[in-house]
Image (cartoon, rainbow, N blue to C red; front, side, top):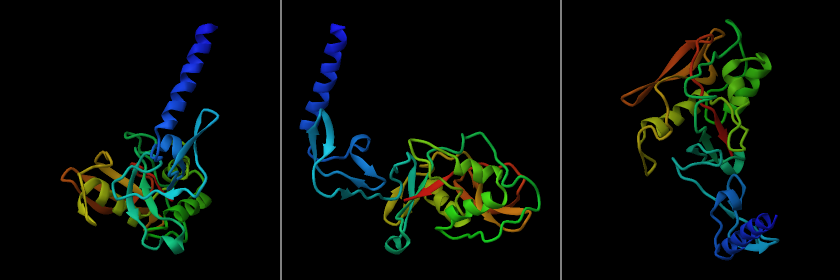
Length: 232
């Protein structure tokens, strides 16, 4: 019992000392409040590190930075003030893993109306797909994905997926940032988007080992890989 008390007191002492030495809050495990806000100053309160009074400072990301969900930022929205979101983040792994394949639909000839192909449409596409085909494997896998305490993932649109692969798979100099090839750790293969081309086909991105990408129209009952995205 005495040893347990000593251990508890030691942990409290370590936390207090740690807080005393923190002047700027950049440890996301302690100081992150939301996806892109962090505390600028910490103080001690009941042996815990907490934000001091005042507004939290904005946390910004560059292309290729690790995001709050553990994945990587692949798009920065120039219209964030009007559209309500700033970043697109790719999931850290394929869903649910790098070897599992998913069909786009539960059967052939299932038409989903209203799907978009542009950046910013992946979330609504995923909702529409699951509304018309509730068991749609690729969209359902992305929608129910949960990692690092983050669960607002979706199946990206074809333009979102194309952008994701251009930044995180092909790499190179992009918007002033030099990115290594395959920053996102993608296995080569075919990846589903949430954009259909017909009632029987949907758009996919094909990765090869150059690295390079291409678009393809695949049958909706073909098993492809899934890499989810999220916006914040």
